[in-house]
Length: 78
Length: 344
Image 1 (cartoon, each protein chain N blue to C red):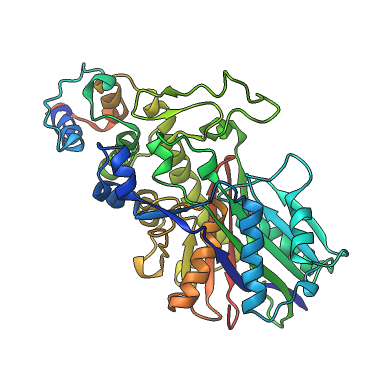
Image 2 (cartoon, rainbow over the protein chains, first blue to last red):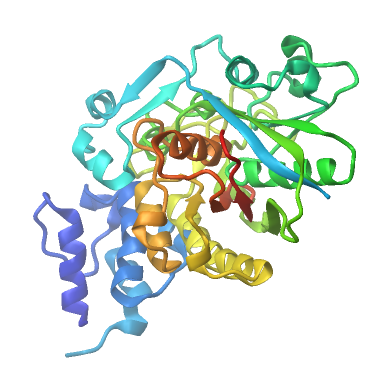
């Protein structure tokens, strides 16, 4: 999965909110990122990559790039 | 030899039900259908303002006495698992002993655990029975987390419900080399104490106007330090790490395989968590009990409620071998195997 494809997965999580994420966005400004989404994110990474990431760190994430970093070891460039 | 076995289970749910539709009125971003899809919960029973966990536990036990052969006079040890006691002191179990009319020769104490509490209670009960210290243990679980939850904290208000259960663990004569409850696997990690906590109101941080001040968490929830806080992603991560390892260790310790287990009864936290744990633990859905739609996460009561409901609807058979797993606040976890009786 590429970074762009991972961003698309995050955009799916935002539905019905339509958004186009770049990475630099602040999570608190997104409007749709909340406590349920942060749980969903941990589950999504487990389902896509089989990885159990640090949920406490996810709860402290500030930006979309912070979220991408959790998946970075499993992303490729193309 | 004398073996401890679960002999009877009953439970009590408060009358009032909080539905997803009612919650959606408060949290428009979380429609009722979304809450149902994510949590698997449609409604939660909520204790009345003047109804405590001890009240509910007493009712659960009274129902059990009314429906089963066990008499109050038969009980020689009372255990209450609760995190919402009536008082700092005295122990709620002592108050309940009197209310139920249990013998004054009966031992009684509370223990403070949440979602793992029922399995810990079974361990203590088995030890009491098989060491000749008791013949009929009444194990109660009861909590009113709703009283800790801020009305505008949707992260926990959508999940937790109030309930109480009453279980009798009895000594029976058995020729089997295997226990009827056991083996047990335990785990504790207090480094995660802050992940599921009511920070204020105890002696570490006494209640004050400052601790009562509610504030937003920036993620759509409001709470004070006197309210329940749960770090959802962190609790999920803990569960995904602890539970599969617990299942494996329990299978090794017991010398059985997954195919030897008739029903897997995990703590009913929420549907999202149960789905991923079932998949991680490679358990077929037909043997994995899910029972939280009309009750929510009732903390230490979810496992006995699921056993009682499963017995009543036939999904858990008499004499079947069940795997019981509790995990959560503490952090604390425990698992065991339990052979069901002929009737419950």
